Amino acid sequence: RKEVEQDPGPFNVPEGATVAFNCTYSNSASQSFFWYRQDCRKEPKLLMSVYSSGNEDGRFTAQLNRASQYISLLIRDSKLSDSATYLCVVNGRTGNQFYFGTGTSLTVIP
Amino acid sequence: DGGITQSPKYLFRKEGQNVTLSCEQNLNHDAMYWYRQDPGQGLRLIYYSQIVNDLQKGDIAEGYSVSREKKESFPLTVTSAQKNPTAFYLCASSMGGGRSTEAFFGQGTRLTVV
Image (cartoon, rainbow over all chains, first blue to last red):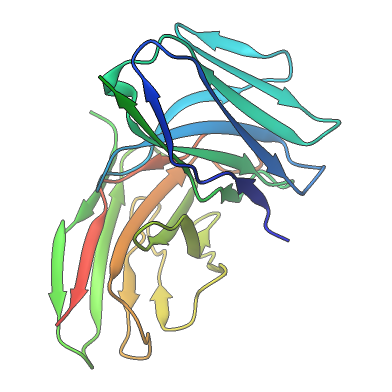
């Protein structure tokens, strides 16, 4: 079983729509969780960390459900510039390894 | 500015040749990582290092070698034993030491075997 699993999509949504991505992880001892954004042919960049209490950054909301071992990312009022691949990342029990999902592709359509 | 630098950005290699990809960071991070990404695929871990002189195999270490003689530097050698080396290679670093902080990435090296 993969450490981190994501729906690869693609998600094609109109501007202004709300879109949600989910991700599950297999190791219940995982310590920290992140969402990264990767643009075509570029390196991944941190979008936001995910905390147990949930956290929000503008139009983006991330949530963690430890009991069910999944994390989510909600994007409200989608912009054309949100088009990218979103990677779910889990830091292992020792804190020294990162496990990446395969990424979810989002295209926001005018 | 602090960051992580990979070079070169593009690299072409003939079959049967070894090639070394450079990765340097000035973030004072203990842990460094090498990933490989193929088109439409996720990141796969090749090697990582938790501290100077520590080398740990990842999921796809065969055909690759690394060294960590200095904290700032973590070069990756793609050897002729790697059967399908054409890919996008990403180097990353993090604070390490069991601290749950994020990873920072270099801009990547796109390797093509010709």
